[in-house]
Length: 416
Image (cartoon, rainbow, N blue to C red):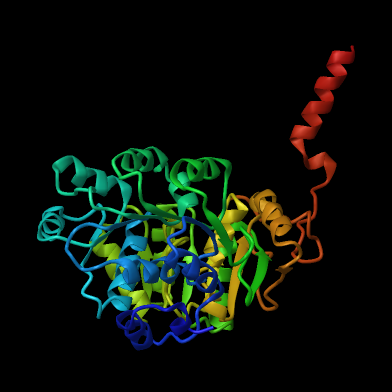
């Protein structure tokens, strides 16, 4: 199957060709014909499968450039808004369609100016869009297409009430598309409110890891994670690495460690300004930074080619979070490595991920790394659940355990 076989306008095909794409991905093959027929759709697909083009191309095909708002694409994050906006400009560069990308964290005046000049399509985050609606900058009377992208992420971020507020302002007679990597119950309920007789298309099973990924876990005491990460980056010659850390403070701390060892680092978390975020992504995308250290803000919607390694410096709390993290590599059929650094305290969270991957997780050890180096405060850590894969600290003699002795003494007092 080729893009020409869909019957897309020649102006769109020219944009696709100039972007270097030749063969549609599975989600595009399934979704585009349905959307060109005007059917509502529920698309289940992992990020990195080409789902953005799956809904952008049919929208561009059906829109006539009139500078009246015809289509609205709602996304959960600024980063995803920017990437979807860039896709529209890439595929639609010869169509004359005028679009606006609307998100918070930046000055609102340039957005107001763009909207007042007239646009055919808006990509927006919910909060900033509602701000423009309340100011009277957006009018929906001519709108005939709505896309809700990363719906499960919208749920995670608490945007569903805002989504419902926006939907109430839209024409009922419209073409609606929802894309989500997972389908929790509340999202299924939202589909019944938003869509009419939808067709469900699924490129890969929900919440599964992409093909081409190698999943490995390195058990390591928490105080040695930084040293092990430095060793792995050097040993595996990671060309472009994305490292996920649980907290903003953790991102800053790890970034300082890596920079001190000569690595070119970019940082991404919610305390950074929008300008800083955009520069971090641009530097990473262009290769000016070898490593991007980020919180889960980068787990979805980050579309950057050539990421060779994704490290979970902290084990995510939920398997779906790991799936989205690891989905930043091995995109569009490429190969990639996903690596978890697991401390003993994170063993329970790791078990859930291991079960979810159904045997795809490989337990590993760095052959030249000293796992027995004691912590300055705790004196080390043990891995009782995987004794063959990591050093186990010997248990102290019973007579040296004051808490055990105290418990036995109290027991004798009770008996007497």
